[in-house]
Image 1 (cartoon, rainbow, N blue to C red):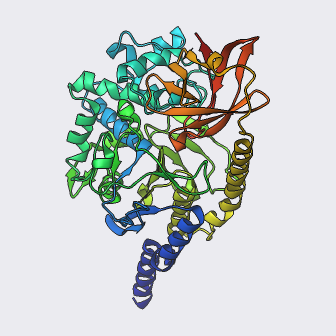
Image 2 (image 1 turned 180 degrees about the horizontal axis):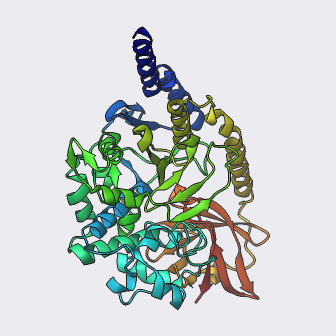
Image 3 (image 1 turned 135 degrees about the vertical axis):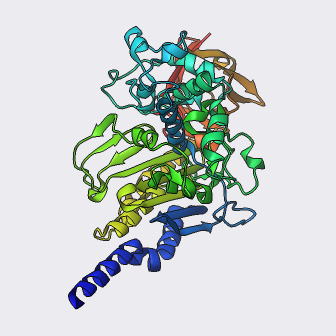
Length: 502
């Protein structure tokens, strides 16, 4: 009898130790504070839920460097692509309710819809869209779509211009307009726009009182964190708030860790929250079926062997556990959410500097602590390479800026001015304003200054610091400008756009 009692006590003690590992109880504050300093993060908010309860919910640092207002559990961040699981869950629910089928073709709801090739157009389904199956490159088209004035239908129309680099349903390519397209089906079926349906069926039933399904005018929202970046500067630069409501199903939600804790608790209780079924379990389960294999090879840095994508959520066998997670990136904000059903563990980490990896490395540290894995300081391991790459980029910018010494370009400034066009992006103009070449995009608020360096090279400096600083070269034919390639921060899109002079 004494042995049985002793075993029960030992098991109970072991369970409690795993519920509250030493790192969480004793060290997480110091680890976060050190990481924020190392990675230059103004503010961070975190929530950890375990066994149906919130075990940590806290803010660190400030949401604004000027006002020094502190981050707390109600501080608002743009959660960006963490919105995708809200979209997928909504569509999986409508599938469960027989309002649609995830295998329905997109052309059933939008007969005018086309992608680059006709075969894919005929075959592509809602599930394909939620699984990134088009075969386009990751972020392909986002320079066109992000912060643009194009309507949602216009963005869907432009998808026919995106030439895939891979094969349909064979190559992985993360696609924001795929999620926009899937989300637009919701209105066709329910009569409610995506943002209204998600609010009425997820946000409001969960009591997420401080969550906005659209991010427009975020600067006016009480408690909103300010976005920052130091991708192209030594010091942190304040950024304008993104407006991606035209891509809303892919990434427009603004929320706080207090509200997201409710979303995580629901995920960990088979769609229930406070004893009430918010989302039917079959719909929750459908989002977690792997539809895209990203890799089935052992990772050399992290303890997992496979990595895939369901409907709006990544999944892996991290530490031998089935882990579901997603990150979100907007200018000035990077966030992640994570949940491990078999451990009844959920994590969310929100930050307001987009140029850092600590928001993910901290998640790995927390998972290792709860899983009983060997302690690793992922932040310290990753920081040197990050700093080296960043310092190299800053040296390149400094070197380019030093080349600007009022030298005359090969042709007069008037030759470079005019209207330019790209079939995907649309139109832009270059004009001489105040003695400088100024680039303006027709469907975007962002502008750029073009300053001559030497050797027929110019320097492109965007008005929005998040977009970057890059060398630029005009293609000329004698005394005539033919075209120019325009690059943007790879955080937005990797390939440059060729604009032809009209």
